[in-house]
Image (cartoon, rainbow, N blue to C red; front, side, top):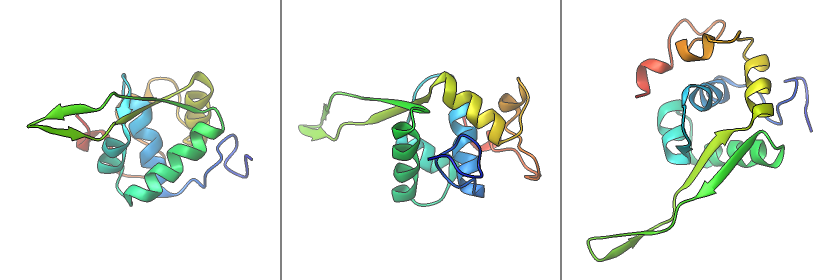
Length: 118
């Protein structure tokens, strides 16, 4: 299902570039709500992006068990991580060389995404 974005099943919009950067700069798995919060855009579109990436085998996810807090059950959280193929496709799509993803830079952005990320 890849199109002009190389190996990615999604359009390479500004928000999707930021989503890829969040996934690249996170060493551990990151929650979908965190991807949405750090990258911007709508929450619904963030999950559409993640579902398409997962369907293409570029992202894996795991679901956390529900948590009880203050006598109420909190919803399950899903955590995402790039696969090796997903990391390679993201690096290629963003035209990054090894090590640049840690700088939070992408061509033409003029700002760092990493500044907003812990």
